[in-house]
Image (tube, rainbow, N blue to C red; front, side, top):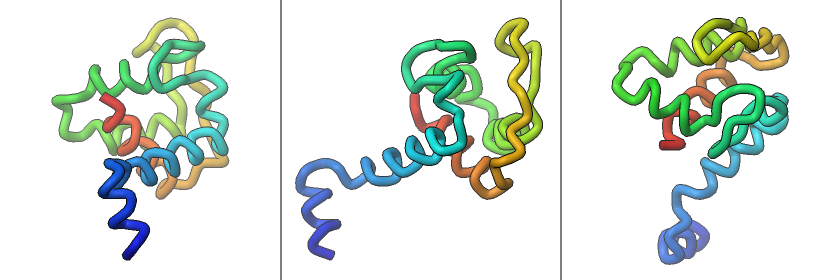
Length: 101
C-alpha cells in the first residue's frame, strides 16, 4: 500500500507495468529488431501503435503476428515467427505496444 501511494505521489503509478513489459519484450528478443521510438529493422512500437490505433481487433492480430511472424505490412523484411513467446505473453506484448502512442 505504501509503495502504491509513493508511486502515485511521484506520478509513476503506471511506470511499473510499462517497465515490466519492456523487460518482457527484451527477454523475448523483440528489441533486437524493434525499439519503442525509432525504427531499427522493424518499425518502432510507436509506429505500430499509431497504425492500429483505431483497429479494435489490433491486439489479437498483433499477438498472432508476434507468435507466427508476418510479412509485407512494413516492407520487404519479414518478421520471423517467435516460438519462445506464449500466447499469454504475446497478448501482453501486443497490449503494451498499442499503449506506446
